[in-house]
Length: 530
Image (cartoon, rainbow, N blue to C red; front, side):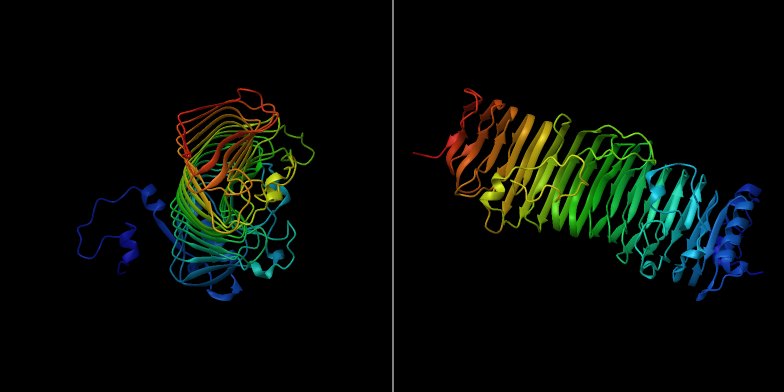
């Protein structure tokens, strides 16, 4: 029989006229085997159910020791396909795997690992548990037909892809559309690679683009996502940390948050690096770190992010919802959030709210650094907004707008130890009566080389309330302002203001009644002439 190009590329046969190489060992030949679903009875007409044919191909591939299950061009209607170890599903260009629009077609799969996702879903189009070296690749499409699921309650809408406690998972090249629920969920998996995929899913509720949950050693790169819920979200819905995760070179747009850690945080997050992403047309936060169900967030670095038309560029929250990850389990204590660096961010915000960096009284977040950040806000805040008391909302679901319109148009920072703000530039386009920056109960503040535009009348450009151990240096006033820095609160102290260019401020520092004598030390500032 004439050798096909694919057989040659796979090493199953020599090219015409080529000198035959030594016969490969049987194990290598088996691993490169190709199983075409059409050979098992699949019909790509978009109407006939192909679940058995595709599953038969997967099972045959697994029995042979592994290889590739090929779905050629055509439209293949199916319900749940269970992936097995050493099996790669390849969707050829022009191929579409269609998820059934009938929930009854999907069998229930209850995983052995308990997590809070037990209350969300128990069915999926592609499912794997305790498998290794599995994946999905190709230039084809997976369409979950999620718009057909009109009832938006949990447990009656399947995921498209779900992998649980798997090792060596690869998803690349494919386009994934229209999920009834989360698009893809990876729970307690190790060594996951998601590369070069496109996700477009805005047809139903809970349309997260990618959910990485309690996983370790994960790489996400070069993906394009338009999602109805969070675009790329790391979760810890069990007692296992989400650790050693990188996300890079992605383009994101969402009706919720673009890059998010949380809200489920039971297992915590460690060693997370996110870089080189663009975000546009996002209704909630561009970057959201949300620790509310216990757990520890430690060592998170986010850099080189460009955003446009996002409601809040940055939102960081340490709360205390305290939800256990299993029914009847003990309430987790308040978690921790420490050692976060967010740098090199350019963003244009579309909402008046502002950005909150908010811990809890008695549970401050620690060592948070924001540097090389330029933000533009729409304006619209009033003097009443500037003076309003902000509720703690300890157990409230975390979102950028959970505190209402903030007293600062740019950053409202509360309950933080070790806050570093360096080379931050902010401005607003419309009328604005709030300060750019408010720090409340902040200890160990380093504010350097920054320029915060403030209103010329009324409120200061910056307000400190009960701030301790602060060093403010190398900053400037980009436009005229009545008061540059206002200090309030009887707990304020050890504040040094040195080497700032404040010549556009009518008053450099205003320490209000109740601030202890000597709480503010000033030296070497350039002040307004005369």
